[in-house]
Image (spheres, rainbow, N blue to C red):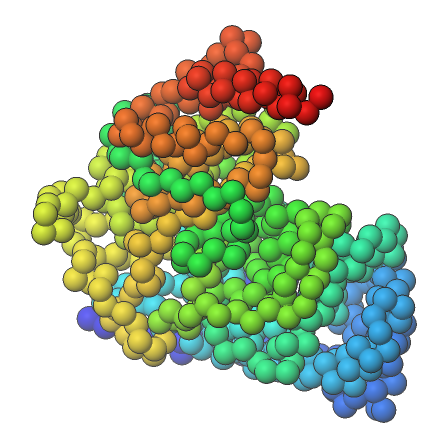
Length: 572
């Protein structure tokens, strides 16, 4: 039986659309989405250029934004205090007059036209959402909706629709009334501009320059790709056909081999060319301080790949057993520096290829580490929390079979045939309720969005992990411990490899030696896990103050001391 299409449902009867409608600026009447008439008039005036709209400065732009917000009955009290001053500062003082002229004469009218198209873009999105991914009698919901806690699922959005939604964020048009009650992060850009004025930093100016550059690019040539957002969930209860939250006993008995681990002392995660799943050192609220003052790993990624920001519209904060994976976000900007030294450094042309769903082959997974854990990070329950958080982000359902309720690497013979392959009607669904069949089905590729009867997230089973010091900067985690935790998670998730970027921190100077030693002894997950548990117990109880690497191989600590002594004698 073919996939049962439900696109004929009227808009007002769509659960997905109704769940997100209170958080959108458009309204629905008679089964159609539209802007209120007064709003249309204000946006149309803006679309005709500065000769008609008289919007030629940051001050007049904010006045126009205020008029549009008033037409939508949005209170000015919900905007950050110094938002008007931030718009004036950026557009009237910080950018050149040539840049300002281009913005007001070319980019802003084009953005206004994109805003006018939002209702039709949304309607087209929902008309196609039901049939985007389907196989036999199964289909996957991909429509824009509030993807709440413990609700595994996917949302597919065109880059064009994302552009229109982010234009709403720039104009601060999203209702803010119920976002906090639904654990949703900020989505309007008012705090971004307000912070620029209230506590000016050049890094904050550069963040806004990245966003403005994104709008310039999409107004010059509209992108035609797709971006997917997935909430991944490890079930807290034993559920057939789903991967559940492993207990400590599971990790302590796993005979899964540790995957290859490559230490990279130079380079950045986002610049890797291995096609790996790139780790976002996330806040539990997706995006963290991206739209406020934040400017570390996650926030920078959201600035150079601004399409990530739209996930903040509909993805509430993550629980301990959840992760968020985003595929297809295009990179638009280059940068230098980090934190206070972050600077926008010009245009970036993304050379990543596309998969069969028209998503760029950029895969990013957001996992939030413990914040300021101090000594509690060495307690068993927190070790388990961090390991399972990484595992949730890293596991690929199509590469796993259920044994108990946990994910195990497939056991295959010399011909690549699984010895413990389940029958097709027993196979686990993915966390998005996709029925994943064995190799014959997984080799099928959706060549275009209209083709029914097959599903595959291209090449997922060959994708490694690109990561680094997750939760070790602003969050204060132990980098040696976090490296081992991520190795455990990637191995148990059946990932083929892990690429670890040390970013030059001293604590990891011997990481490659320890990895080489562990690999030479052919350790499996249980052996590394039990060593991590033993070390953490000693560290928590005051039995050692060594880092994990020196504790595991004391000879490394001696070698470091000798090198330091030699250094002192050579450089008095």
